Image 1: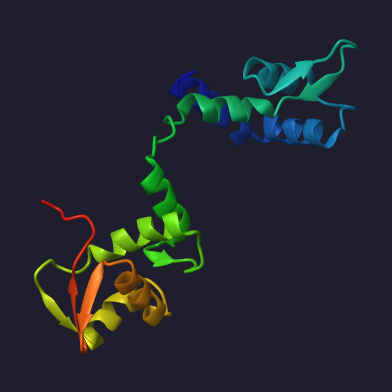
Image 2: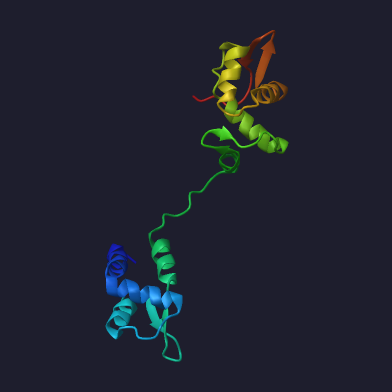
Length: 164
């Protein structure tokens, strides 16, 4: 299928006579429909005759057009799938998850801290609050998993992936 077929279907639905005829078919009101409009819809794949010769709408045409123009689904790795599941618009939807999934999310969060830089607790809280309102739990998870280290009220990154 191509753009011309999509334009043709949209053009049919733009015309009052074929739009009303298509709507009538969808609603099951097939009496008194103009044969000319039915033929136009048939040529665009929006109407068909069944075995008894009665007209019916073929809305599956829209699905076919969408599928023909859709780009293939993006292939995601397992870590990317976890991140897309638990991070929506850059915010965590929950902090309660299985440990292996939580580690994927925590490694991602740890990347906001530069290796070798020491951060006061206040700055760590601000950075973590961008991900979830329970920043204290996130901070505790990061320390417990060895992604951040702490001495007093000063934190530094001690694990996780490093972008080169």
